[in-house]
Length: 303
Image (tube, rainbow, N blue to C red; front, side, top):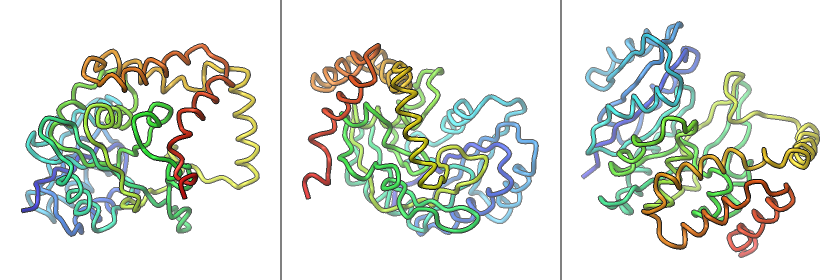
């Protein structure tokens, strides 16, 4: 028996690509129970596109509208609140495309790992494309995320999970709704919940086609020469300003520890304590700590 799945989407001025994304959801081999959309006071044709799609698919779409802009994270959390507390939840961006089996493969894997008392999560790789065609067949390979084991230790140094590829069980959803209001990256918090308190499994197959465009800053295509120059510039910046190297991760992990440390096992608490000790250290010290943490988990070294 297939599980019931709610797709949760936060929209804002998404008229350029929203129709294609909605259509890719409608064409899933495993249909969702609902598509829950919260629109953050869009001023373009986003709501009109949603309304037309809703008329073509009666009963599938549930839309909420903010008459005042509340920001992407707050809007996402608002949409998540309307998901059925008993359903799996798949997160969705407004401008990507889903492969036809995105929901079916995610739900099949989630059903094998899920526990009612633990936050459980599946997520996947992405391919990247733009108006000219394919940019990268694997976002993980492009970003180096496919070269090492995904676990709590490696997660501390950088988020492994792209929100638009995720599917979570009801326990994960309930905990995510309790995320502190000042956390600015919900997928990073979701990853900490699942890897820290529950079960998380990544699918190496790209199940989402990530759209690269001028308004999207998650991935930007650059020439190799420019990438090398940028890399050198980053090293110099972090050498001169070491407090900025792991700043975002240290802030997020500290907030997670403040909220959930007592629920973690001793090994994970120790890992967090050691990671947080990097605050105020030199760039060299932070890089060496990262290399030491990752050393046992490089997949290439095992081949």
